Picture 1: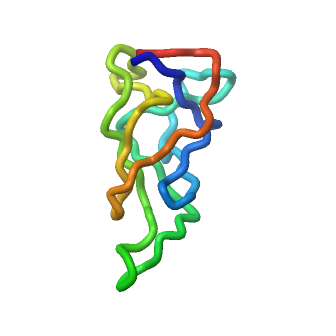
Picture 2: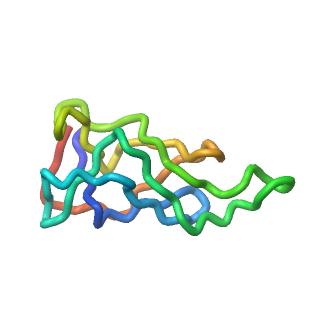
Picture 3: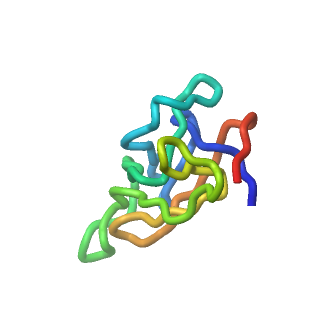
Length: 107
């Protein structure tokens, strides 16, 4: 499915409300003046309120993207889209894209 590309200004959260940001955005391609993000590097998560052991497994630390664009790549890596899917470590919960730029779509 086509979706809008994610850039470093996109709002992404974990299932517990933690803010996720890209660890390595791609500076070679910009959308609306901000670098796009690709599937390879994980997102770092801050502010996750999932309780630590023994109550639960602890807060989300990283988000690893498992589904990204099939046709659009930057430097050989698929770009992330609004409908891309990720799994958080160590909780196994998904990341959710709340806000993406609205000018460039990919597939």
